[in-house]
Length: 375
Image (cartoon, rainbow, N blue to C red; front, top):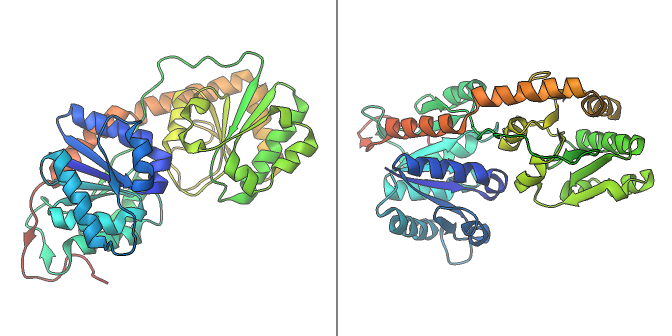
């Protein structure tokens, strides 16, 4: 079976390790995989992963969406040695061109419904692939919606009653041994795009308070978010600039995360992120905003959750995990066991292979009412 992954810039930036891991695992199961990404990031990515990376041409004058799709499909055929059987979409930014590639290849579309709000893009893509007057004789050839948890599955089943929905939790590989961390220092790592600006500012200020109290506390923070929220000046006034490090591309800096003591994630948007699972697997204490749409953030089991985005609550949470060794150890051991039992990478790969085989086959075009609303 031949699989084409296609991901937009946002998803590629945040989850390229997961896609690469899936591709290697699928290859071990005998599937052939290629990965299409926007051309601006394709060249750099091609040097970092062990699978073919295909550039998606930019939308420029004289290059229609159909032409861009034809070009991408030609490249995919060269690598896969035939049309892809399944095109797996990661991110709403590739819905249009991915749908055109899927239609031209007569492939089955698979969609990763990894966060709320992707349903409209998936609907548009399904309609572009199948159009009106299409139905299926059986499960073969139907659109596949992949959800990471049961809550997302319920949304998908309601939004796409004619699609096939599979719940496949995201997985990571457990760390065999805890990474060596600096003795006598505490590393606080603040991640996230800062869409919840109030929570991010409060968490940053709370981390600065802890750094003022203890000279052993070092802060590493996402550079783009820190600058956008104008927090550098606050750290300067507090006199902790010597223990504040800003870094770019925080979503890809898994090396920093593995050597942190505490990962702080103030954004709560119902978005799943494997970096949280990686942190739990590596015995890094996770502090996060309470997120009712997240099933991996469980207060007291996988993370310490902050309900109100106040400096005081964030400071109390930080102080608890850096000053109470027993409480921190209990939390990290519980989180690590949760990931080991619920979020295995091998299980994600096996389930994905089964789902692809489930929907593999040709669509049957018959004269009937449209399966998907074309509007």
